Length: 181
Image 1 (cartoon, one colour):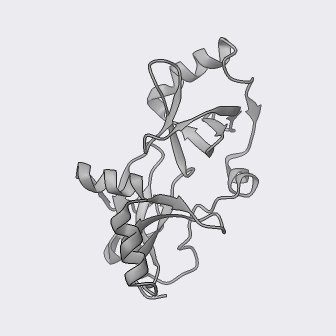
Image 2 (cartoon, rainbow, N blue to C red):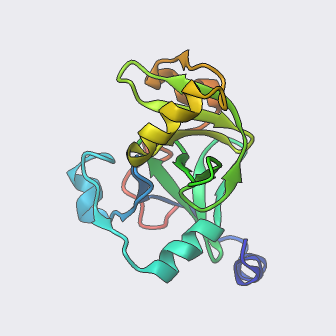
Image 3 (cartoon, rainbow, N blue to C red):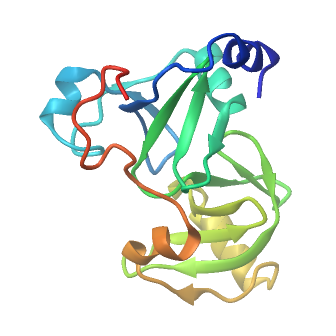
């Protein structure tokens, strides 16, 4: 977490959390979701605006965390902005050397390989569970065939949140958030 974020949290400790305003899709892209988008439907049905500003995305990546309830958030100064997940909290990218890194650039060690009913590949790592990016499926199949990863286990996509302790929609059941608690 950035020092400036820690300082803001100490200076303003009671800023309300924000729900529904930020989404992470299954390709590791971030989406800003204003009131109009949130009213149009849940994420990813109504995605919002794709974030393209490299420095903002890097800031989100450095300050992306998980709370004790399994909800993922971006610590934006003193405010937690909870993230709507299309699939999983991590989107794994396979590097040219065969190593694995998250959409935020964090390296991870593979513990298990999973395949869901749609054929999507997930990795359980020392950082948690995540979906393998669609552009990296060939490298993933090569890692499995070469024995660098354990043989895939079948899993239902709907079972992943309970099995791995994450929440896809912290905003579910909450009214549209304008920063109010």
